Length: 489
Image (cartoon, rainbow, N blue to C red):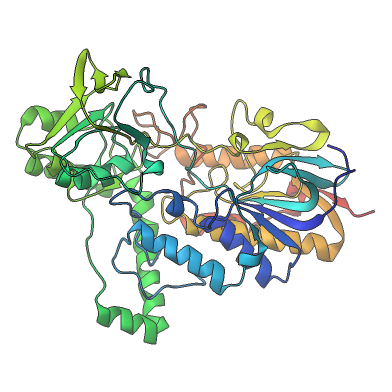
């Protein structure tokens, strides 16, 4: 890229305006860093909560924990808030903290190259500009994994991925196929079964589903939260302590909690499903927490309904009028692809080129590694939120906030100390990689299943295996010798 068109220079460019990007924008503003531009691919903030509008969409982390620590929300309707409430919350935060005017909507950054001590960027409209630093807030799971099914063009019914749920879709009395049994399917299957005349679920591998707390917050409780922020803080603290402990225990093979969770799921299958063959087909053969566990009180019981059929195995093809699997054709009106997302990799979204013309896609070709999930060797002043090993077993916000704090503090320090560029050394990246691998050794993440957590490399580069206190500590224990620093000329 040349400098000819670099009309505009920013101190920081933020990629994405979901929960992470809005968090970064708010923290940059609070730090007094003014010359900031956020680029968002869609026409509104909210990320995954804007995109996923399917029936039953909800978060599987308690809402009072799944919110910014600096923006508690007294109005959550229930323990696990439905998706539209979370989307409202992100939009409200963007407005109330005054960061909307920093966002350019309907625009992505297609390429960024480190050149002469700064980032040269090109957006999706072909506009070029420069920035001293970049914060990538591109989210965890948002690139839909759409299987390339033969015959899809020929299918005369409606076929879509769950992220593209049609607003005007009426499933009342329809014959519906759901392809996939991951977290999204666990939420939509019971909802569809309520209205469809026939529901056929195609399962490649079964999923463990835990019980879900259905508690609603009464009007009185919400009033109390509004009047008494201390009560809300206490609730968050209580939730955090419970999840802090349980999430790590759950992901260690052989702990009481891990065994109990699996036993409870088995009991729920036995209680919910009369047909022993169906019950057996719904029971995974891997450890309860090998893949990300899901929660629902209705999922297993749905397969006991007379209008629901479970088909073990993937879908081979679509025909004009239905789905072919295992040599059988099933006539349906609607095919819902609950096939999840591609394991997150920033390099699918943007071409990043660091020092000496090295592309991030090449740096990560064999294994995805980082410095404490937030930086990569050879890519100065580039910070990741929910980066490699940067999403927690608890609430995503528990890792997003400390990573955003680190990015914003570091960017502020560069400015104040006259530092042009900072990047981690390869040694520091290697040390962190060893640390993370060591932490995974006694967890369930490698216990007999394949999951998006470790797709491609065999190493889990998605999740932070410890608790959020340990994650936060990563940014307290910062050794200056971990970095290569270039002072401003």
